[in-house]
Image 1 (cartoon, rainbow, N blue to C red):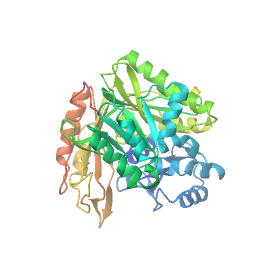
Image 2: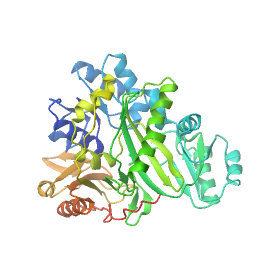
Image 3: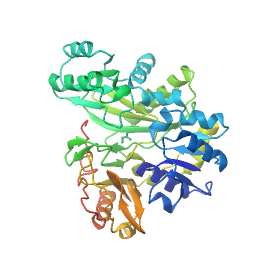
Image 4: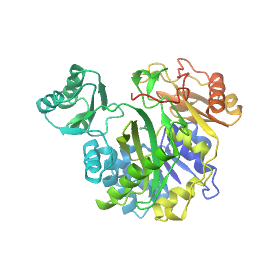
Length: 424
Ligand code: GLY
């Protein structure tokens, strides 16, 4: 198996695959210091599509599992399939659910997937005029991939106009921001609902919740995610069914209707509003750090499930979860999510792993002279299982306390406010 990517999500995927009898050898491209413990890391960048395809062909890779969205949106799955190789992850056409927010929203409208009211614009003046029809706060989204920075929740018109100007006039996101979506703000609690699919059958994963803001109490700037937990006690069984029926299954049916055979993960970022679930965004890949909170709970063979998506026989599988809860805490570098420091030695990794039921997933790490050093904004995700979220949280934080590196910071309140995480 070849795992494409180098973050905590990809480490969790490689770790999950390594524990399965169906998988005998794992490569990671490019991987990180933690992935090197379970995989052979090869120095091919996630954006080097020809390099990845040539490697998969040369090594007769049975299954390529693509972690991040950018190579999927760029067509990595298409290129692998042309060469007769199996790949977990949608083709370019399917990856548009994440690659174009406008297209995804139109898909929702065409197929009755509940989502906030929104309109697309290419001209600043038109978009600014539309703001006059809405009440604050406003949500402004760049259409394309913007490295997680393309969404602004604006408390007032002036902030929304600045976001529109940045995208449409100043082109701070390049082509990704040449169209924007202006969306009504929906109050509620966010939840991440992921499902595996072979394009027909849909196998929902357990729900997870992500903490996107940097600071405790959901304060400070947005990040890629500072921690996650699963299950989500706030979501009742009934609501869980609605999420599966109204969003996940409907999304796969919608794609099928549009002639797209989608094989991979559909990730729905949802707002649980008083009127029911509302789709804020689709992603075409596993969540980060949700994956680090989900895979420790997975009791089924991950390799078998991912392969079933690719081979089109997912209907023959069920998915089994540990009844335990999982909490994952992200340890980040000083400066993140802005410019951050790197190159600091990380201590305590071995000790952290000795804490009961703990797995330490590497995100931004590298080897330097036989030492593991920081090499990214999000450095590690410390995940722990427990009988309930309180026990999992206590174990995760006990492990965090023994890890150290210069400038390390993390949230102290992951999985504490179980009644909700406000939209960030
Ligand atoms: N945790 C948010 C994401 O993966 O997009």
